[in-house]
Image 1 (spheres, rainbow, N blue to C red):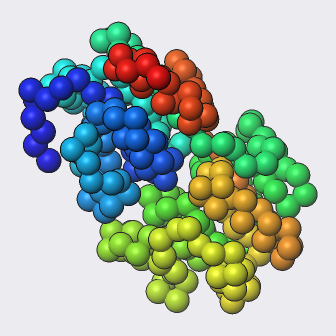
Image 2 (cartoon, helix red, strand yellow; image 1 turned 45 degrees about the vertical axis):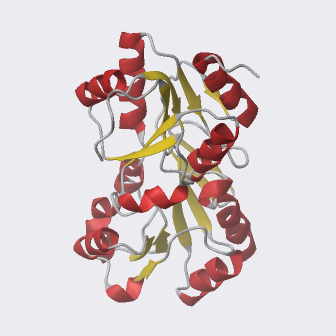
Image 3 (cartoon, helix red, strand yellow; image 1 turned 90 degrees about the horizontal axis):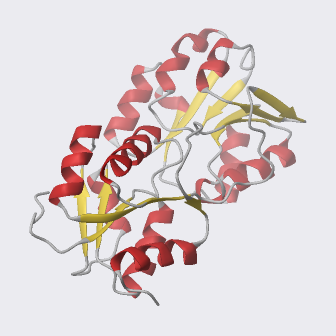
Amino acid sequence: MQLNSESHKRIWLIGGTGESAKLAKALLSVQLPLLISVTTENARSLYPISPLLQVWVGRFNLSQINQFLAEQNIIAVLDASHPYAAEISQNAIAACSQKNIPYLRFERPRCGLGGRGAEGQRGKLIYLDSFERLVTGEYLVGERVLFTVGYKVLPLFRDWHERSTLFARVLPATTSIAAALTAGFTQDKLFAMRPPIPLNLERELWRHWQISMVVTKASGTPGGEDIKRQLAAELGVSLVIIEPPIITYPQVTSDLGEAIAFCQQHTGKLA
């Protein structure tokens, strides 16, 4: 999407998540001008139509972010990207530091008592700090494993089809399904649906496939982590939780009011 480089100064909301949609509505309600970036055309539908809001679709490297900040007259950055989208956050932080532009990370609240570290286990909850640790360990041996982690990491588990029975739930998109098939997941071991997944449907899927282990990300309630925890305890299923990358953010909040105040402060529209 080509944007007007002569546009008024505005906030860059790094979006694509449910949190970013809530933030956008809240910021528009106090008449703040926004430029929202997402990585797919489908994500446009998350946001309302408003003359104060423009949506940019695409991906950035660091040099592109520097150019983007200047051309689009960005005066502050509110980062509500996915917790595992480390590259965009790290590049945005670096660019904002170079240009002295205020940056605030909006974090979704964590679900339960996560265990940051190389490895932690509480009953049937297993915390790991990376997918690589899961691939190289023995956690999956002989298990009927359901992956609910997106399609990008599925190729890491291609060799595990010989030692385990693997299933995957992916988005109902051609790219996601094709990637899963290429990674060795057959059609009868794939389920395509866009979250949120209702608890009853999640339960029936696990039962139908006789799942003994589920691999998920530490995605909080918006990512359905609470439902997976509940069902894992109910059905006696092991739940492997992959924690997000560690990023040192200049400022972080999980409070909507603080995020609005940050944006108002830097647009000169204090409540």
